[in-house]
Amino acid sequence: MKLEKYKGQKSALKRTKKLAKGKGLHDMMVST
Image 1 (cartoon, rainbow, N blue to C red):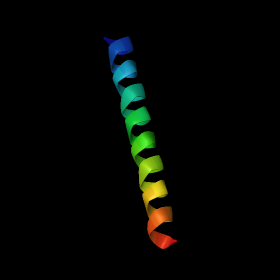
Image 2: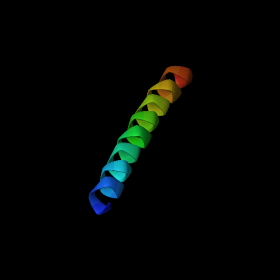
Image 3: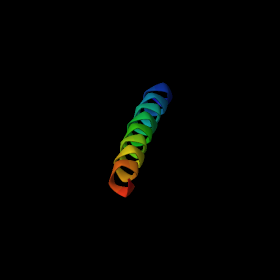
Image 4: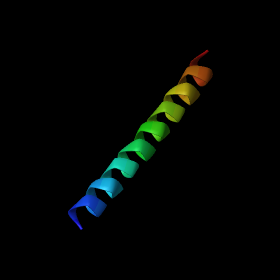
């Protein structure tokens, strides 16, 4: 159960990181 929770948190972090990266790229495209 502990490992499962850790896995979920890791994937969630990956998702938010990807989202943040995409948002950053989008912001850069908009500003230029």
